[in-house]
Length: 151
Image (cartoon, rainbow, N blue to C red; front, side):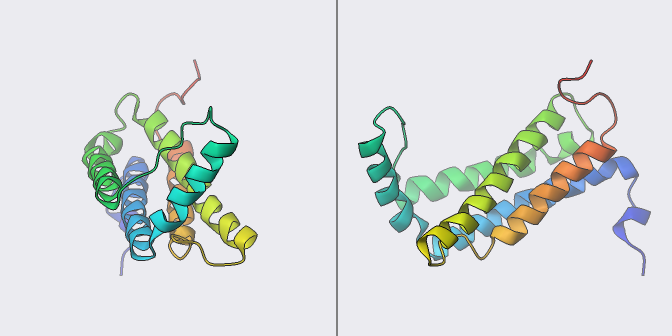
């Protein structure tokens, strides 16, 4: 049996990692939706806004929240051809999104530790973390051309 690396050029690895990250985000959204993430998030956002009124934390209805995240996943997947081609600006997009997803995954894990209960989205967080770390790794090591911020 041959691996994917024997069928794709090395420069395709960031694209494969990006698609994996997008699918991990979709799984994470499903996990959050199934475990009623908004029942935890919305009250927490309201409490934080009371303490820090300058922090604009939104609250969401389920329909708005799930639609926005579905659009984000579809948008991410629609960018895949650009990531595979390593189009200008996409390295920065992958780096920012993957970094945010690393923080997201860690936030669910830390929230579970702090509260002593499994937070919505925690079950899929290891997959999200792994996919984000892989996307960062492949983008850093196998992206052709200059890195963001380099000359």
